[in-house]
Amino acid sequence: LITMPTTKLVGEAKSTIQPTDHPYLTGAWTPVHKEYEVMGLEVLEGSVPQDLAGVYIRNSENPVHEPIGRYHPFDGDAMLHSVHFHDGQADYRNRFVRTKGFEAEQKAGRALWAGLAEDPRKSEDPTHNGNFPGAQGSLKD
Image (cartoon, rainbow, N blue to C red; front, side, top):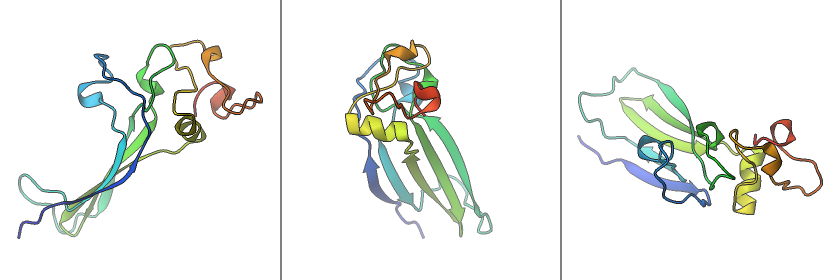
């Protein structure tokens, strides 16, 4: 019995990323801004063992907004990708890690923090009171 996977869009981040030729923003590193659930992944060869039960999780950088200055791969927003194995099948899910910094930038609609390759004083203060959320007050969490 062959069944088609069921794909459900469950979320989407507001993004300002523009097309680029930056090597860490293209190809396998092209940012993903949609969150999905895909139930019953198609197995291309062989089969998933019936007794295989567990989860494979990958954390990836996944920038949402144009950088303030230069882009460094560690500057991207965190996205978790998971493949859940159960009952001879596999399911996929991906989600952004919704840190205070991610939420503040989603609300602002742009990057608020300069990245690792820039002077942190280029960062904006989303609280406007000198009380930056995030690491050291000037790096995005």
